Image 1 (cartoon, rainbow, N blue to C red):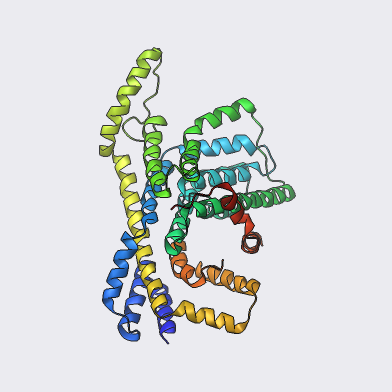
Image 2: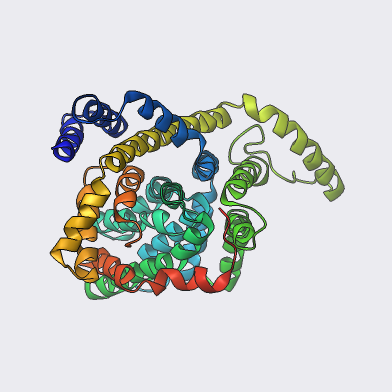
Length: 412
């Protein structure tokens, strides 16, 4: 009865338009008040624990802030130019380049929404102008944008590691091969469709242009090396790497690319200016721009937006952990385990059930909330995208091979 009431209230509240975070919290509190022996003080303690005892979650605001700087600045456009120069000459190359750009941006932002927003706003219009159907262009970005969940660093992976006490570093390593496979699978599908329907190709502009676009995108690409390299080598934890990433993104956009902030549109070297003078001016501008940036409207807006998104996501996480607390106190995972054991289903059948439940929940809920609710229930059990889902579900070494062989580092 308690289980039915809990989930009925959750879905009812969401269906009438109550935000996910409030739906999770209200359904949990109402269930405890009227249908459970638990007490409200336990809710307060769990809410405090959810926001203070999961060190890994501290990385989320920093990744969101770095993603904000990279999305607002011209980093995405430079990455797209580099991707087009690399693969745009292949049949369907512009769409394939969009997938590559999504993969790269996902690796520097950790966020699927940021990836879709930053890449999609630029390439969808470009694909349509080049002769691709709008539905095809939109579908490519909608699917490629999900790579932000898989390719590390991933905010959703941080949420999972907090919910299950798994190593965030190993989670990141586990996502490398599946992320690359998913991107490759999308590109193969694009090539097949583009060949059949004779979609346009871009002209190969030469290795010089490829080198130039790569050099321009280098500042953004170095973010991947900085974050993942420091984590995998054991130099920094994901939280420490995220904080460094936020600072790095700030300086790359404000001082390096100068896409926003007090140095916006100020050239590194003015016409007829001596190199020595330009260097001295750049050094002075580094310090002055750092001091002036907090007062710049664009910079302040990025920080404000990051604070809003971080607060929203962490509030969802906190309420989802309260919901998971109710599930645990009511021994729902135990009852589910007993039911499945009584059914004598094979591991394959169980994994199919897990996939179906996650796909169903994905139609109604935010990924972080799904993970925080489902992970405690399913721990340790672990058409194009469905085929890929089957691959990583039933061939676990796709995810596990790299973290098992690459590094013995076990920290968070």
